[in-house]
Length: 189
Length: 189
DNA sequence: CGTGCCGTTGAGCGTTGTCAACCAGTGTGG
DNA sequence: CCACACTGGTTGACAACGCTCAACGGCACG
Image (cartoon, rainbow over all chains, first blue to last red; front, side):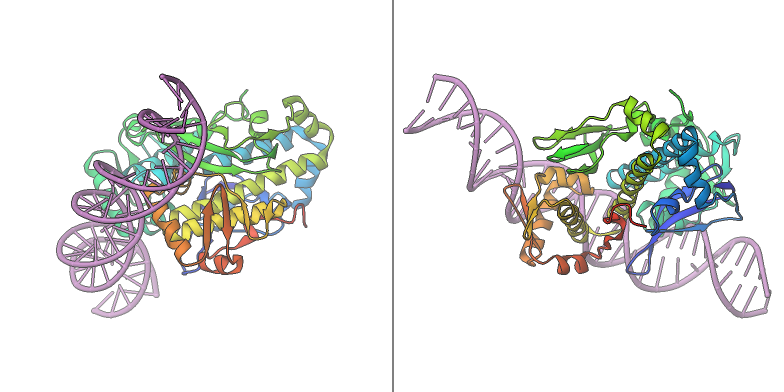
């Protein structure tokens, strides 16, 4: 489990490139897979200095054997991961560049805020433009131009590993963001 | 759980369109979510006549409480779903149209074969070109042209709700397909 | 003071989308 | 039995979004 910093889930491509599949921020489980799917089908790397907490394979199995509430919580976390992945698929498959980037920043801002990592309207966002490109299925050059446009329109600014969202409500409306997929009220029912 | 036929997981878009997120074929669990995430963040629909088996919410909870091996199996199935989603993300984000379509047919062929639903080199594939477009983040027109190209190159043919893969090995190499993400040997460790 | 990474900008090109027309197959009602 | 409508597939022309290549600027680091 990530305790501090950002990590990244990615796949390497035939042509030497890489596709970024998810970002892990504090509070996220990063490797529930290993306990069950023994072959990993992707890689994980730190993006900044990170602290992580280990949960051993045996502990995982014990949880399933002895603590059904915890097992359900783990299952729940995985289902949320899946929901996020589905939304990324929509974002990348259907939205054009400007909305795509805006949507991504909406998500990361709300997720950061949910774990208390925002300061007013800005948050820790350590990605380079190349990394954003690998994430959003765009070229680095186009990411650059798109960020410029979003800045010019007054939506957001990225500087020195921090992103500032000038008006979250505006950005949510602009990008067509629907926060429900994040299932941010944990275990709610 | 789908027993017979194809179903589809999708999200409706602001502009009236829809994004297709996954296909469910016989053997797939379609709604483990409902038992835990009470709000559904997407929709499911049948694409052909379908038979389904119901597992009640209570049964799901009982499984977690009383049968850790079954709970693990459910968890495992969800992790595989997630792996497929990740690969779709790569496919749509990084590959150009022809490879994208080829990759998709590879996957559906191998998944169908794994549940014994292929006949030699062809299998049930009920999607229209519009549905393929909503799946792969391309326009219907471009799907049409791409299928034409793939046919001309001798890779695959689609006709009357069946797809024929002329040489799976060729198609796998062409599309850069790596089957490991499907985790097709169930429960292996 | 160089070296290297990251960000920025311009020019030209290519893949893919849009619009529009048309064809083939199928089911329906007169 | 034959219009008719409807759905799905096919094709062409043109526009646009995003990519590639290339050059350059700022900044940190050794």
